[in-house]
Length: 176
Image (cartoon, rainbow, N blue to C red; front, side, top):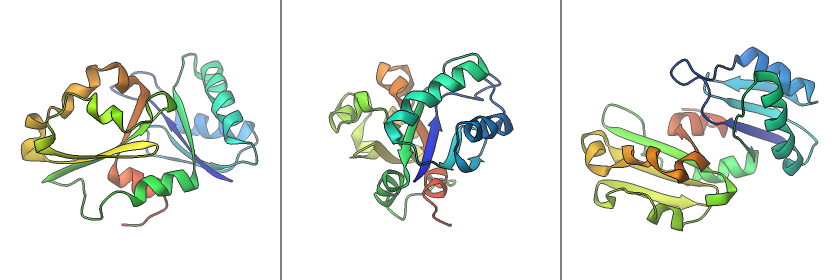
């Protein structure tokens, strides 16, 4: 089965450094095949015959042992990633006018009610829930008005890992 591992909070501002070459080697040492990394932000695409639940349990342990710090990791199978990506409206982009992101949700907060707990101004942002993620689009001119930047101070934010729509589409195998 094809999987995507989404590592949270690595290589941000020079902190919690994880080399992609070492990350790839670690996944291969776990018996994963066709391992590739995408960008430096912790996206690993791989194949494995191991059940998702076991991977979800084992990979973070191996990452901590290898890199010396805990790395929250969310494992999604190919179908889950595609389902989320298919829910993103085709006209949502990251460009000079729009900011569109996917917040992949850890199981503890994977619920539509999570949106209601965010301190956002919904009149400035189009935000939607799909099982496994919250997706949003905001015009850059309205970004500050949307209060989207305030979510990083919430405890719920620690249970999300955010990727822009371009990355989400790439992980799902879609071409531009």
